[in-house]
Length: 231
Image 1 (tube, one colour):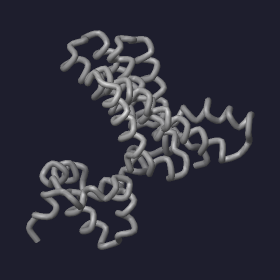
Image 2 (cartoon, one colour; image 1 turned 180 degrees about the vertical axis):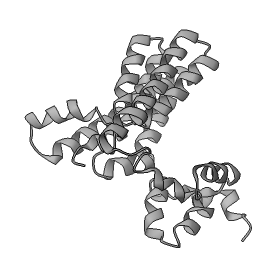
Image 3 (cartoon, one colour; image 1 turned 120 degrees about the vertical axis):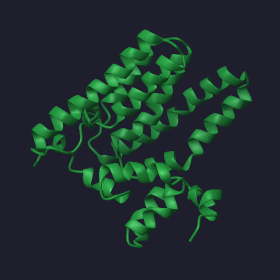
Image 4 (cartoon, rainbow, N blue to C red; image 1 turned 90 degrees about the vertical axis):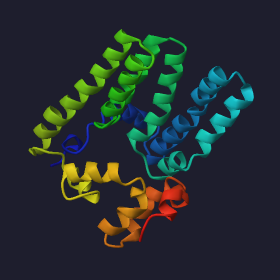
């Protein structure tokens, strides 16, 4: 198929594409991604300062965000609309902490447009608001937005454009097990899945597994469980 909607629902690309009217080059996308990810330091600073009562703590958490290997890896790995959600959702949490519900929901809606799997994260954020913050109305609305858009994307938009009953990327779940059920059980059973499942299922092809480890700074290799797992 010739439409992107057969693979991903990334409506955020529509407004992003307008930037090409300013400068018609892939550099525009890379610059946008860099700027947006860099702006994530602001809400990281605000949240830490609010909860810890210290500008220094805010500076530390902002630096940790900017220096996080996963963030830097996302920025260096071409342009992906979903990468922008790291900053967008940080702003959402900052607005949530400041009780600016309208701004919070605005960020949530923008995040939902990034990719079809982000709604699941939004669903969990809604449950967090509902259960931990005990804000029933806001939590219910957030969770409903997440679940509703996820179902619309996966059950209506994607199948309509690709003609498939399941996502064309569903086969990737075989990385963790032969079936969806086995994959979930394997993830639950193994706390060291980064090192115990990936090499075995990839048949020793380290080139395919390195990007996932690399984006985390290979920190999984320093896990006590990984070093002490049975042969």
